[in-house]
Length: 74
Image (cartoon, rainbow, N blue to C red; front, top):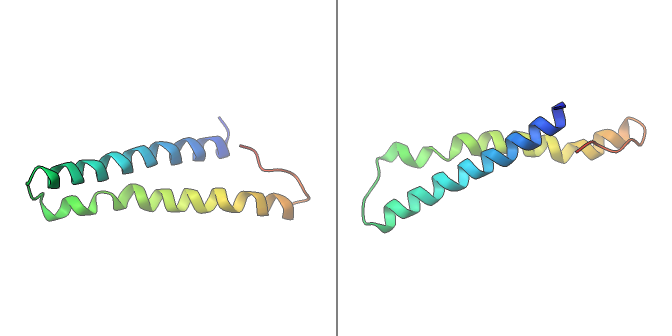
């Protein structure tokens, strides 16, 4: 697995983790229970890594153009 494939794979799985954590918080709130305050910070960890990997994937086509017109792998 090359570097770009690994980043895309990680980004996808982090998005699943982020969605599950946010859904779990909403389900907990829907049941009338108030989770501990630190629980609200849990989605920030995958979100931070998703931001970095998303910015990397966003920049790939521009970097490929700059290197001589090659298309980014992925």
